[in-house]
Image (tube, rainbow, N blue to C red; front, side, top):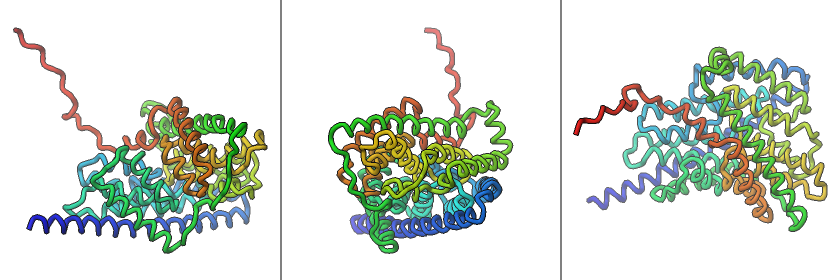
Length: 437
C-alpha cells in the first residue's frame, strides 16, 4: 500500500513539472511575440517624429511605475530578485505576494508598456518571474512537491524558453537561483525545462537566438584582446550593478532615496526623459531590448556609431532604476556587443563577430557575476563552439574584476528588499549578567 502511494506521488510530481513546463514555454513564446510587436509600434512612432519620444517615453515611464506600485505590486524590476526571495520565504502568503498569477499578469502588461514607450529593458528576466509564478500556481495545492523546487524549475524553464538555451537554463538555476545542485529535484527540473523547450520549438521552430555564427579567434596575438575586453566588461558590468544596488537599496537617510521614495512617479518620468535623450544621442539605437543592434554587430551588418554602447549603458541604468518592470539580460548582451565593436575600431585585425561574442560574455558576467551562465548562454545563442574557450576565459576574468567593483551579486543584493522584515520581538536580546560563582 505504501509503495503504491509513493509511486502515485512520484507520477503526480512528474505530471506537475511537465505540465508546468509546457505552460511556461507557451508564456515565454507569447511574451517574445508581444515584445517584438511593442517595439515595432514604438519604431513606427519614431518614424512620424523622433521628438515624440521626449513626451511619450517619460509619460510611459510614469504610468508604468504607477501601475507597478499600486495595481501590481512586486512586479517592478527584472523579477529574478523576487524569485530568489520567494525561495527563501516559508510563509505561503508572503511568498504568494512575490510569485502569483496576478503578479505575473501585471509583469507582462507593464513590461510591454515599457517597451511600447522605448525603455531599455529585456523580457528574459521577467520570464523568470512569470515562469516561477506559473509553476507555483500549478503546484500550490499539492502536498507532494516543494514550492522551492517548483519556483526553481519555473524560473530555469523561463530562461531556457526565452533564449532557446536549455543548457543555460539549467546552469542559471544552479549558479544563480539556488547556488547549489539539488539532486532530489534535478530530474523533475530537467523535465520542466525540456517541456518548456519543446513548446518553444513547436511554436517558433528550431532557431538560435542571434543566428548561427562560425567566428574563430586565431591563437596568437589576437588573444591579447581577450583579457582587455574581459577587464573592461567586468569593470563596466560591476559599475552597472554597483549603481543599481546603491540607488535601489541605499540608506533612506540619503536625499536621493527620500526623493525616489517620496516622488516615485516624478523620478520615473525623469528617468524616461533621460532614456529619450539617450535615444536621440544614439540615433534611436538605445531603445528597446537591443536584440536587433546586437545581432547586427555580431553578423557585421550594423551601421551603428561608437555612441551606441555608452548610450545603451546609460539608458539601461535609467530604465532599471526607474522602477518599471523589465529585465537586463538582453540589454546587457547588446552593451557587450557594443563594447566589442568599440574595441574593433582599435584591433581591426580581430574579427568583429569574435570581439562581439567576447564582449557579450564579459559584460554579462560583469553584471550578474555568473561566469558559467554567461559563457554558456552566449555560446548556445550562436552555436559557435569554436569560441567556447575564449568565452570561458573572458567570463572568468570579468567576474573577478566585477567583484572588485561590486562585492555582492546584483540579484541577491536586490532580493533582500523583498524579504520580510524581522519583527522587533525577534531581535537578539542582550545577554544577562553572569552569575556569581
